[in-house]
Amino acid sequence: AQSVTQPDIHITVSEGASLELRCNYSYGATPYLFWYVQSPGQGLQLLLKYFSGDTLVQGIKGFEAEFKRSQSSFNLRKPSVHWSDAAEYFCAVGAYSGGFKTIFGAGTRLFVKA
Amino acid sequence: DAMVIQNPRYQVTQFGKPVTLSCSQTLNHNVMYWYQQKSSQAPKLLFHYYDKDFNNEADTPDNFQSRRPNTSFCFLDIRSPGLGDAAMYLCATSLTSGRDTQYFGPGTRLTVL
Image 1 (tube, rainbow over the protein chains, first blue to last red):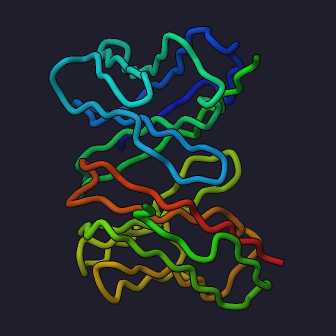
Image 2 (cartoon, rainbow over the protein chains, first blue to last red):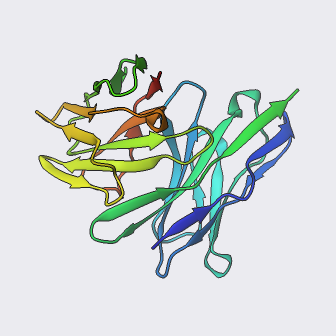
């Protein structure tokens, strides 16, 4: 069965600094990988997803993520963080197992300081 | 324009008193999902509908039921809420499968007294 680990419960970065959120997955084959963001009081919104092809994926709001099969990782990056990026970020892995299943990680809360 | 709407946003119920949460969508998507999200935890899938086909997760308690009377609406019924059922309940939709982007509603925060 697939699983997702987000090692960092919370991260604090300064506005304008770069950001990297870590995600490791466990799955035997090539998984479908997603990053979602959840702002306070709102539902989850898809930032980007990876199914196949180029391992560097561009998403919305200036985010990108890189799939590294050798490390079973799908880390999310942004070169310059804005205060509005403060939110909870969820990595998710999907695979076909008696139907398509999506498993979410526990999330990383991002704090942005001025 | 809201695409996935959940009502109410906040629901307070008493221990053991049945409660129904509502979700509607304007996307005309085939798949609708219900997730339970407890504080500082990952969203956990309870069940989903592919059109009218109901798919229950193996570890979803029998206390949780769902109805989808038409494409646009889906309901989550909790027959006898316990204190452990207090959580955020998220509704989501996708076009045809989990590979497609899931669109989430803002959630209903359930408090059990």
